[in-house]
Amino acid sequence: MFGYRWRWLSCQWPTPSQLPRFEHAQMPVPPLRGAAAGGRGHLNLSLLADRCSTLRSLTVVHAAMLVSGRLASDAFAASRLLDAYTAFSPPATVLRLLSSLPYAPNTFMLNTSLRALASSPDPAFALAFFSQLRRSGSTSYSPGRHTFPFLLKASARLPLPVSRQIHALVLKHGLDRDTYVANGLVRAYSVAGRVRVAQQVFDELPERSTVVYTTMVSGYSQNGRYEESMGAFDDMLDEGFEPGPVVLASVLSACARSESGGLVMGRRVHGIMEQRGMAAPVGVILGTALVDMYAKNGAIDEAVKVFKGMPQRHTATWNALISGLAHHGHGDDALAMFRQMQREGVPPNATTLVRVLSVYCHTGQLGEARRVFASMEDFGVTPSIQHYGCMVDLLGRSGLLSEAEEMIRGMTCKADTAIWGALLTACKNHGDVDVAERAVQEMLKLDPNNHGVYVVLSNVYADARRWQDVDRLRKVMKGAQLSKIPGSSTVDGCDDG
Image (cartoon, rainbow, N blue to C red; front, side, top):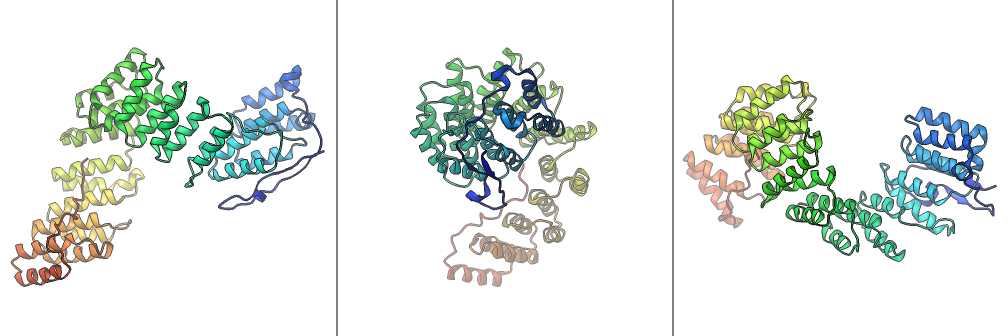
């Protein structure tokens, strides 16, 4: 019998003692009975494990395997049970089951455990588990093409430069040309922001697949390489690969943010969707991506048409259209869309309310802005610095500087230089010296090197004809060699972009 010890401790970084130990005795792994041996009853238990949709039903199957003795003698049944547990249980449960087996786990079981750890809240355990397996010197485990993608998934979620080390192991095992493994490398490097390395891995592949193309297009888009994302999508089509919903959503995101050719490519992608029956009707994810792409590119009529043709809409869909309308000067239409959103019972989120407050800010509708701001908690949204910024900017534009200052000091979040800068700008426009002085003091507390505020305050003094204060401030500026620093650090508190 194998003697297995199970120990699991909670720690920031796992140590070998935190992982299951496998003290191997000279006992062969039991044969794969279920499917391999054709035992119908045993196979049925394994199939039941695969089909369980709840943890409760899975524990019933687990109990049946224990009672029948199948778990102790059938590696196939144990493998299927272990795989099923990864969908319902934390990694600790999976590893507890693994270490309870009276025989050495096979490669499938170990990779299944590795997958569970890589998907867990603390993926560092996946790397520690793999390191322990390598240190154990077990001849029954050799990492393969199904191992490295799990390791790379874990490394992509860690603030550690481990992807290169795993890449070196991939090269050592001769799997760098395997598209399944290469896809994991491309994803890991893209998530880490190392797009050029991801591109190098991609370029060196002798054969590519739809999956690896999708990862590369997405990697470019997520790292702000929008034109390259569109170019890779073009290459994907030229090589005859069929685009799926994920790559279409990624390239549409790139089209929405590209500075060149985004609308042309976006319309082309829309045409591809129509040709393949993916736009009649369009689903929520792709529909939202289309609305966002058209709205950000100023093609409002097309955005509205797609929006109206969607049988289902998410809050993000409404946000995309409201933001596009607001950004391109259709404030009244944006507000009308917000009212329709409320009538249809769609709950707005923080992004929705920033856009709506932004419209009220630029149209000077203080009363409506107050009403929406006061009702934020009714929507389950806690005001953020962006929401406060819009209100402070609007109060400042309305000349209510003391109220704006009071709002800043009463915020539930920490004020930044931008929001004080919005108040300072309003003070300059309305000639309020007292509030301007207090705003400058607060800005210098947050950023002592923000010398541009002296220039703005000097202008406020000059507008009020307080020449002694102007001279005094100029001496301060001259002493610190600040006389040529522009007052560009004040930021308008409400941005409709």
